[in-house]
Length: 167
View 1 (cartoon, rainbow, N blue to C red):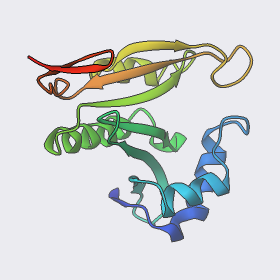
View 2: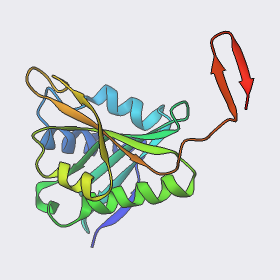
View 3: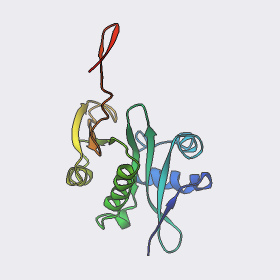
View 4: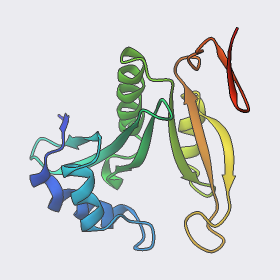
């Protein structure tokens, strides 16, 4: 049986260990980045644990009110748990929460060569928004994907250089 819970700062060691296991060094977040994400960033990280309490996966999410979107920083699933739907379940949880809280969209970046993740994101409704050349290093291209949760909020005003005109 697997359990899902919010990460705490004392989960840092287990998260960094799984991060290093799942990602190459040039892509993996370091201990300092994870410390910031767990202690100071506006957002949260969901952790997936097995029956023995071992970390099997995580999804780190930041809130960006200025863009009216949630930003998935990273998602990792231990190889023993892959292809069982756990990444989809984590993403569905974030999508449901984002809709319930009224967020406009969810954004993430994914490597072009990530043949497992790309189809999953597309099935969930994420659309390619921008190509990111060399995003993960030389010749390691990516795409920014966006899932619209709600239509952008309309303010009823149009900005004209130097003026604000009501419609």
